[in-house]
Length: 215
Image 1 (cartoon, rainbow, N blue to C red):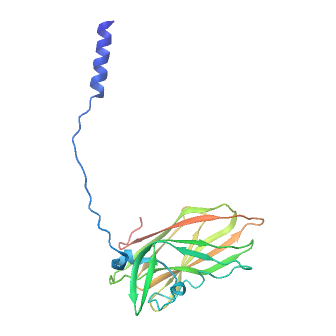
Image 2: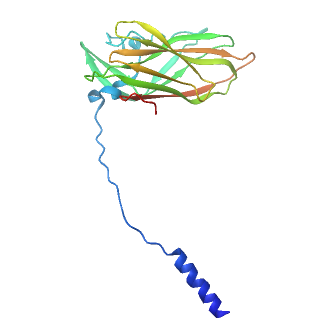
Image 3: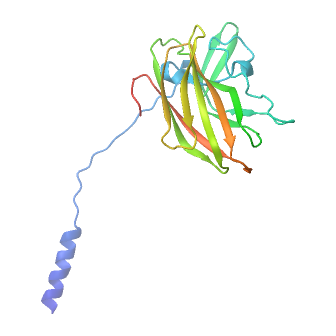
């Protein structure tokens, strides 16, 4: 019995013995300020009307604070500034993200041009490619229809509808190519289900690359 027990202990020790060959990684991340952002880094959310200046990007984002019903109004809150540039005697900003709050009633609503997504470039003249995808489907309230409609404005103010993202579908997405000085106008089409009430939430990803490929 003693011999068998010792053999078992030795086997366990050998099985758990481990040898390591050591490798490592180190990093050096250089973070530039917003005024030095170029190319894909100089893209983001903006409103010509909120900035109160002669922005070289298309005149979009006209309804960022528009009334909906009674004394209720749309509210858009921009977050981190990712690109800063001066045009004429005015400084403009592109934001990494926005939070939009839209008070509506039951019925069909078209929230037109509540904000914009623009590409200034800031000295970089190449194209960028924007991939928009649902991050979190709309929830909290039942909708018969809930879409983000996207329109592409060129530097000479030609416009085309890129398409619509279904906020109820986690796989819904759009892909668009943009040149410097171009922008996307963002609309919401909302149709709450009959008898619906409460607060609904959704989220979208905007991926931007200087390479023509989707993430």
